[in-house]
Image 1 (cartoon, rainbow, N blue to C red):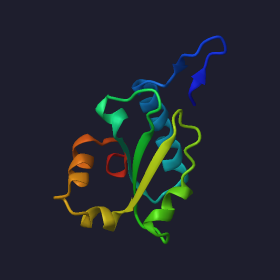
Image 2 (image 1 turned 120 degrees about the vertical axis):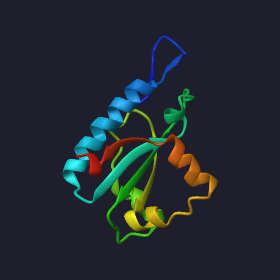
Image 3 (image 1 turned 45 degrees about the vertical axis):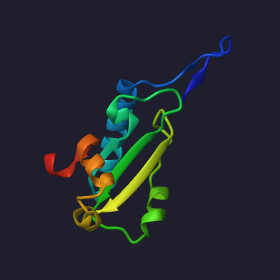
Length: 122
């Protein structure tokens, strides 16, 4: 998490290299624990390189299936070991395949997501 020096009002926020390394280690660990993971990636300011103090990490996770509704899936993922706050989007494989490729959101995900775990490459 961010660190504030005791004798300074300057915040030290994790840089992109630190965050990338942390999320890759986290993805490796959770992929060993959960066999339903297909892909893990991050998008947003850390992927684009325009992060700053206060930036969060936007994670996208694709799983084989889930019994939970979309808006409840993120609670299953403990991201507390990551050095910045996270927003987690969890899609099933079917949802990902059916996603409207013409939406701005999908185009953005497709263009900027940095995939740190891909079952197909294991």
